[in-house]
Length: 52
Image (tube, rainbow, N blue to C red):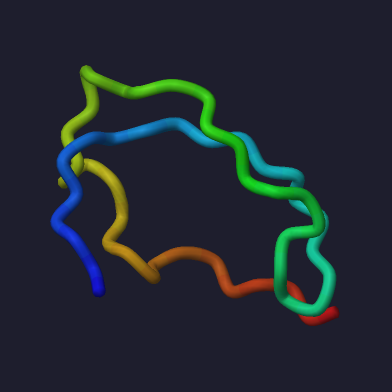
């Protein structure tokens, strides 16, 4: 079930992928209180994962 986003957050990821998944876990960095949720791309939009 999807929920309506209420806050924007910055995350840290290792760009290396293995079989279409991140090799390392995604980590929370900080809340972005000055950024509106609508400023970001919609869920599912973005670059295609690298084949691996």
